[in-house]
Image 1 (tube, protein in one colour):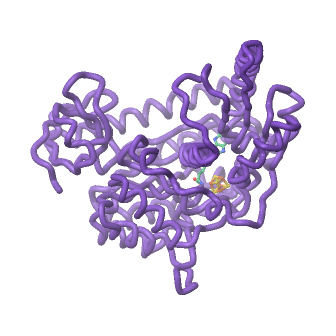
Image 2 (cartoon, rainbow, N blue to C red; image 1 turned 135 degrees about the vertical axis):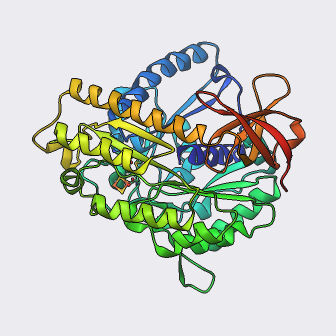
Length: 437
Ligand code: SAM
Ligand code: SF4
C-alpha cells in the first residue's frame, strides 16, 4: 500500500509541476513514505532523515532549496516529535491526509514545520488527481489499486487501527474507473489492496453495499485486464462468495495471502484474532476445494508475549499441515500504545531470533517444494520487464512465483504460456510456448 500511496503522491507532485528526479541529490522535493508496523522500520526513518538533512544543507550551500516531507504511518504516529528529532523536516503528513500535500508544501515554504495528521472527513481518493498515462506506463503492466483502508479489528500487537484509522471502503465505481484508466494505459493485472481487503464493502452506483467478490468480478470484466489479485485478507472475512470467486472467475489468480500469525489457539486468543486454528484449517479446506491449485501464503509472528516452546511448536505443526507456497515471518516487535506491548511474558530477543530462524527454514523448504511442483508444468506468465541478461524477460506466474525466460520484449504485457524447466533458488526458469492471449 505504501507503493500505491507513493505513486499517488508522485501524481500530486506532477500536477504541481514536479518531474521525477533520477538521483536523490537532484531532488527539490523528497518524500519519505514510512512504515510503523515494526520498530526497525520506524527507526530506519530517523537514520535516513539524518542523511537527508546533510544533503539538504549541502544543496542549500549551492543555493538550492530542498523540501523534506515525512509521510505515512510513522508520520501519523510520531507527528510533531519528528520535527523535534529532525529540524530539517518541512512537512509531516499522515496516510489519510496526503491528498493535501501541495497545500502543505505551499504553507511550509513560508513557515517550515507543518504537521497534518488529521483523519479528515473529505474523501482522500476523490481529491487525488488521476495518474498521467505516461506515469502509468512507466510503472509497468501490473498495478496496485487501494480499495479498502484502515482496520477495526484491533489485534493486540498491531498499530494499523491507530495509524490508518477506521476501516473504510472506496465506492466500487471509483475503483472500477481507476482500473479502466489503468487498463487503457496498458495495465493487464491489478492487485486490489486493503489492510483487510476481504472486509471490502463499498457502495455501488445504486447505493448498495457490495463485497470483494463482486468487485473482483467487475474488475476482471474490465477490457484489457487479464489478471486480478487481492491482498491482505483476514480469515474472519473469508466469505463463501469470495471462495466461490476463486472457483468461478478465471482472471482471479489462484493465490491467497491469508495471515494466521500463530499455530497456537492460546496465542491467537491473546492476540485478539477472534478465530481458532480449527477455523483457519476449515477455511483452507474450503478454499482448496474451490480451487485445488491455489497457492497459499501467510504471515507469522514469533516471540509474541507469553509464547512458549510448545506454542511455537504448534506454529511449525500448522505450517507442516497446511503446506504454504510462501510466507513471511517476523519477530514480535512491541509497538507503543498497543495492548501487547504492556503484557507480561515478553520473550527474550535470543529466543525470538532462534524461533525466527527455525520458522524461516521451514517456510523456505516449503517454498522450494512448491516451486519444484511447478517443474514440467505449463503456466500462464504475465511478463512485466526485461531481465538482467540480454534477451531475458521476467514476469509472474498465477501463483505469484517469479519466472524468467528467453523471449522478445514484445511479450511484456502479454499473458504467455511458459513451460517451467528449472526451479532456481529465487525464481523459476521457463521456456516460452506461446502467447496465451
Ligand atoms: N491485516 C492483516 C492481517 O490481519 O493479517 C495484516 C496487516 S499487517 C500490516 C502485516 C503483518 O505485519 C501482520 O500480518 C503481522 O504478521 C505483522 N505485524 C503486525 N504488527 C506486528 C508487530 N507488532 N510485530 C511483528 N509483526 C507485526
Ligand atoms: Fe493489524 Fe491486520 Fe489485526 Fe487489523 S486485522 S489490527 S491490520 S493485524
